[in-house]
Amino acid sequence: MAQLVLEGVSKNFGRTPVLEGLSLEVAKGEFLSFLGPSGCGKTTALRLIAGLLEPDTGSIAIGGRCVCQAGRGYSLPPEERQVGMVFQSYALWPHMRIRENVAYPLKLKGYPRKEIEERVQKMLALVDLQGLEDRYPHQLSGGQQQRVALARALIAEPLVLLLDEPLSNLDAKLREKMRLEIKDIQERVGATVIYVTHDQVEALTMSDRIAILCQGRLQQLDTPVAIYERPANTFVADFVGSSNLLPARVVNTDGRLLLLNGHPDAFLQLPLPAGISSGQEVKVALRPEALLLKPWRGNGGLQGRVLRSFYRGREVECFVAVGNQTLRVLMPGKTAWVPGQEVEVEVKEGLVLVA
Ligand code: ATP
Image 1 (cartoon, rainbow, N blue to C red):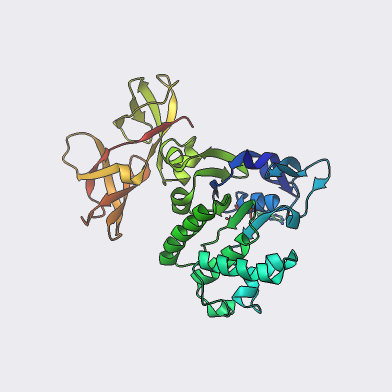
Image 2 (image 1 turned 45 degrees about the vertical axis):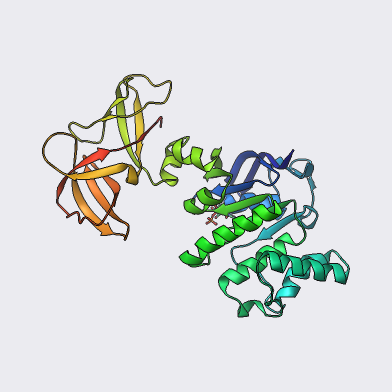
């Protein structure tokens, strides 16, 4: 049975639709991310699940129980929904010691003192914070505060754990470490997690499935591999994987395509999805790492001119003018590509999408 079910959930702020007809099911123990650009409605979706906002249409069920149904005026308050929430800012109580912060949800529910103490100790061990229970939040590092927030959200054994960009205040190195830690803790307790992020790496590495949102609409709901390798549309191809998107016309159904970007003679050969016919206009999505630059030798191929190049350690990022478009290319190695240099752009792989 699904642990969380959203059916046709919509939300407007004033006349602006922020979420439109969102339907999805999340299985028990699943880690599902909401991924999308700023303002696409991710946090709104989380707040609706938590009961901090009411939907205009649709219904939400948690653990098999309907927690709200728009139109019928039925809505359980947040504290009765059995959800845990971790915010971007952690929202720890600064005047409480770590043990008191973590114990707080159980105290509210009136658990006996002895049981609270035992469960707090167990939780602090789970998030590896033993020995720090008498400190105050300001005496902890960002990563440690994050783990306190996680422990506090998990201690009441919520049916669904909601995490709203929990790593965005941490530096790059710590984010990487915390990604592993959160995933490890989630798997150990078997928590059902809804994770909000605009960071594609976070979503791809942590999730069982990803829900891609754009302007309040669900674009694709699938596994990380399927999202990356079989994006449903140009938005997903661009947002996840930063594709170069080029207009093209299908020359024949064997996969010969003509780019329509002002390049005089740019043909590509790519596998076509089913149902595409000759003459049809499509978009070609080329990942920056699926392109290769070679010095131009005048033997045909896709000719381009280097505009800029940036050394990035393990790779060089190049911007190359091809026809009337600029392509972003990630080249492994340290070769310096000089602005103005004529190059051949080899397409190692690409996706054909019907725009
Ligand atoms: P971010 O990644 O920047 O946090 P988000 O995808 O989580 O973005 P939301 O916070 O869900 O986006 O906001 C979606 C849209 O709704 C935004 O345009 C935002 O300005 C608007 N919005 C959010 N809360 C309110 C509110 N209480 N009143 C009016 N508009 C709101």
